[in-house]
Image (tube, rainbow, N blue to C red; front, side, top):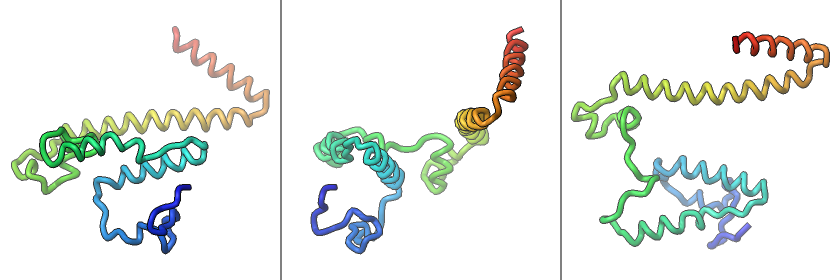
Length: 157
């Protein structure tokens, strides 16, 4: 681990943690921070060198060069659109002008979320099913195989 300047510690719960000095944190960066911690943890566990500073150096330099005006917003700073924006920002000017989340937009967003959840659940089900199947006695495994094959052949017809 690289030593932090100012005698700070990498341990988040330590009295020497730089987190103790922060009074408030922009909510827009919370998920970015969480994702970064997860990636750094995985990279550390897998012994893969990964540096947030290296990954963000280019975009940050571009933002500094642009100043307050003249450049497009970076990906992490773009505005949320559609139903998600209306739900996320109920006091926003867009909602004040009557452009609120419509039922169809919310329903569409919910359906998309359900699709993703179903795909995730199917993947988890396959993992659990395989684990259970592998623990079955060979005779039971053969019967399960025969039933699955019969079902597959029936579906083809």
